[in-house]
Image (cartoon, rainbow, N blue to C red; front, side, top):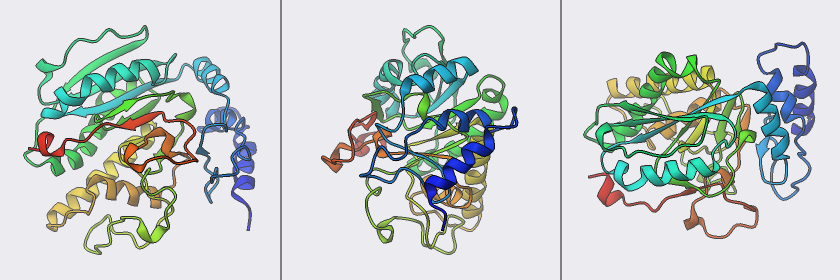
Length: 308
């Protein structure tokens, strides 16, 4: 069996030429990765996608490459109900310090109370767009229906201005570099609660009546962070929305809502890059020797307040 490293290296060689290939620029910069620099963790998937850990990459190489390419990034975030007042400003102010610094970034804030979004002094090359959305009664529906909202926003706004899209939960704060090394054609995140646990503990949806049903998978991915090139994210969000609506017609709700559908999508359509739990760490998981840096951290959860 060909090793994942060899698979990755052959993919790099394949996409170095001819020029103009869709994924050429992604594989070109990823060829600088040192997959063997971290012997304590898995740095490559079975299908040859790199798993991004501290120590594997030179951030300057990635930043110089994406500045040269003129890469632009859309960051979508939902601030609905009490989530707006409790989390949004911390999320945005920390993003200004740590998210894709040096690149052109637009924050797309989807909210049911646009008049309550406070002003923010942004760095040069950064903009903020407020997108009014309807608030659903159940928090589960807010979570699930964001997939359609993102898909619509990509088609009407984002794809005309940005090559890359990241979608993130608002109840988080950036505490370290979340940089251009995270960009890729299709990007998933390892869930910090499951990245080093056996697969039988993964909380896939095991209801065969749901379109999110899975018997097995590769990893357990966290829906708090996902991204990629705009077309890939459009495909993901549209597919998840279609699955959610099919379940609704059958009076079924997936175990972990949109996250269950996201895991099913990435099982069928493998991501080209996987982010380690450094990119979204839960302090409740305590100390882990594999986590050398924290880049994005879960905020303190107040579900009894924000989900009522």
